[in-house]
Amino acid sequence: LLLIGDSGVGKSCLLLRFADDTYSGTYIATIGVDFKIRTIQIGGKVIKLQIWDTAGQDRFRTITSSYYRGANGIIIVYDVTNRDSFNNVQMWIKEIESYASEGVCRLLVGNKCDLTSKKVVDYNTGNQLADSFSVSFLETSAKNATNVEQAFQ
Image 1 (cartoon, helix red, strand yellow):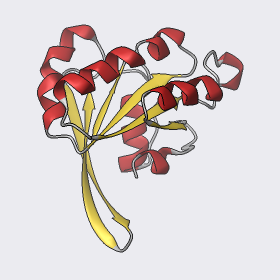
Image 2 (image 1 turned 60 degrees about the vertical axis):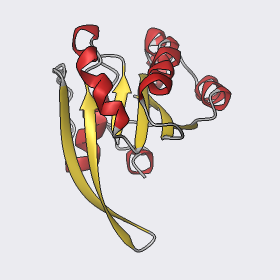
Image 3 (image 1 turned 90 degrees about the vertical axis):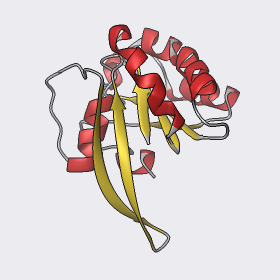
Image 4 (image 1 turned 30 degrees about the horizontal axis):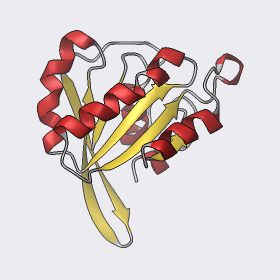
């Protein structure tokens, strides 16, 4: 699985919540690529997930294009309190179309849904964008673990 999206949207926090069930409110930019492994069970089958966390900052992004090719699933993350990160989803989807295998599973995730008073992208807007690209959609919170397990399954 590959996590992509703008810098600061919570990709690393989602990964930490899913892989280690931890959360840190301190922001540290990912340089290049990081990854974690977690074994899960789906339908009686044991599946070992290798989840790659990519840098959102432009200066590190060229490193990540090679990671698209081997991905079985890609999670595009935006921050529901940051309109620019939502507006950039289209650019991230174009990257998937350019670099990833055809027919790769894709999920759009609106993260930080716990920050309701700061929310600038509502659920319906996110869901409509996902529908327009034929992508599944979830809102998550790495802070309180809302829909994190579902996002990675």
